[in-house]
Length: 98
Image 1 (cartoon, helix red, strand yellow):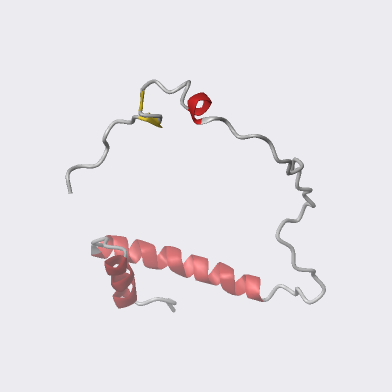
Image 2 (cartoon, one colour; image 1 turned 120 degrees about the vertical axis):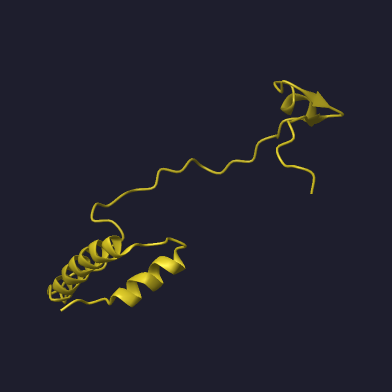
């Protein structure tokens, strides 16, 4: 028996703004049923003695020390800019008139 109905699959397509034909609905129903079955099987795995983890391999964060430094001056910051004007970067306009 299918976990999902054709109506539910069509609704999922509508939510995703995807028009699905009958052939696609049947194919996706089969694929979703397969996924739901796999998830169901995973629910049966005994995990009572398994510690929760975010990563199975311990990873140490390598962070540099946070040291205060003198920031660049405005002149130095824009020195490498291809185009600058009045102490600011000049970039091409990317948005239309709104």
